[in-house]
Length: 321
View 1: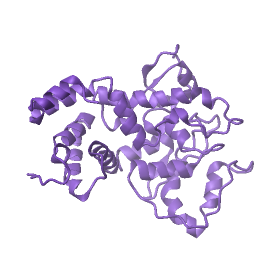
View 2: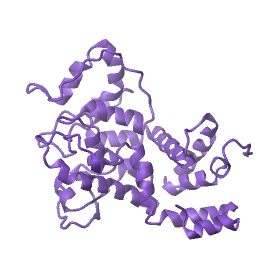
View 3: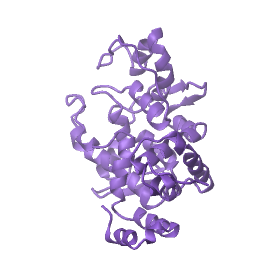
C-alpha cells in the first residue's frame, strides 16, 4: 500500500518527473517495509516463500526441523531485506561472505561465538560453508526429499531457477527412486544409477552435476560430518568441487545468465506480467548498467521504474529512444 508521501507525489503530478521517481525509489528502498518485497519477490522467485510452514520432512529422522524452520526462513528474509535496504550487489546472492543468524541457527550451521536469540549480521562465514543462497538452509531443505537429499531437485533449482534454463519434458514411465537411500549406496550413487538409462540421461546430465556439488549438505542444510563426493563436471565440461566451486562458476562463467534471470524475474514482478520479447532491450540495458555500477540492486530497480513499461498502462502505445 502506498504511503502518504507517495500518494501526495502522485496526486500533485510530481511523480511524473524522473528525479522524483528516483527520489522515491531511494526512500522506499530504506523503508522497513522492504521486507515485504524480500518475501514477495526473492522468496517467491527462489521457491522458498512460506518456508516457515514447511512440514514435508520425516519427523522420525529430523525431529528438530519443526523447531528451527522459522529461524531458517528468517535468515533468508533478513538477507534479502538487507540487500534492498543497503543497496547491496546482486552478486551477493551468490558470493556474499556474510549472513544473518541467531544463536540457534548459528549452532545449526556450526558458526561459533554467536550468543542470544537476537538476530545479527555475521561476516567471514565462508569457512563455515555459508554465504549466499546456495548454502542457505531454506534452499537446501526445500530442494531435498522428506528423508534424503536430492541432487536432482537441487540441480534442477540451479539450472532452471537461477540460470533460467528449461528442461525437456520427462518420459511418462520414469521409475520412482526410493525415499530412503539403500545402505550400500550414497545419494549420489543412487542418482547416478538411475541416470544411466538413455531416456533419463538426457535430462539428468544437465541438472545432476549442479546438485552433486551441494552434496556436502544434508537434508536440513547442515554440513555432513563425513563429506560426500562433491567433485563433478558440469554440462559445459567445467570441473568444479563443492559449493565453493559452484559459487565461483555461477558468479563468473555464468554471470551473464544469472544476471539475466534475476533481471527477468524482477521486471516480471514489477510489471505483474510475463516478460515479453519487447522487454529484451530494457533487460540488456539493465544488465549493462549493473556491470558499470558494482551490480547494485538499485540500478535494476531504477531502470525498471523509469521504463515506459512501468510508467504506462499496458496496451497503450509508447515511444522509446
